[in-house]
Image (cartoon, rainbow, N blue to C red):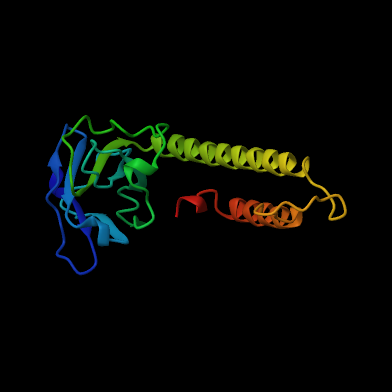
Length: 200
């Protein structure tokens, strides 16, 4: 079934050399992945996916000192036979937390200096479950960031003094409290627009 998947990277030949890892998991290596910003993953049309399934697409950045750490990109299916994924802003292994669920999605392979792309055939129902999980994770990011920022602003504000109350201290730098408050408002606005903006 590995010949039903293809990849297009701009400026390169179409790649269809997926190797089976199991009956439902397929893997390919992409060389010089640091220069790739987007890629297209598609069904070649040679055969459809089994009814009621979808191909969950995972990406692993190169890391010379660790096994692959899988990040979910999205999915393709018989009703959505191709998709474009932006991978230029995905983080490398050392920038990811240990919370990622896909570390061992394709088993423990050897350390790889090239990027890898894996496709796992899963029930379509899993798409909604994963989407819900991602949405919950983003909500958790927002809540954590807001609480952390509020704590920082409140902590700094508890030490605020007026200019009349300040004692000149050579060599000590001071930041106006309203500068921190402006930064907090800007950060919160960006977080609401895109919970993952801090990853880029």
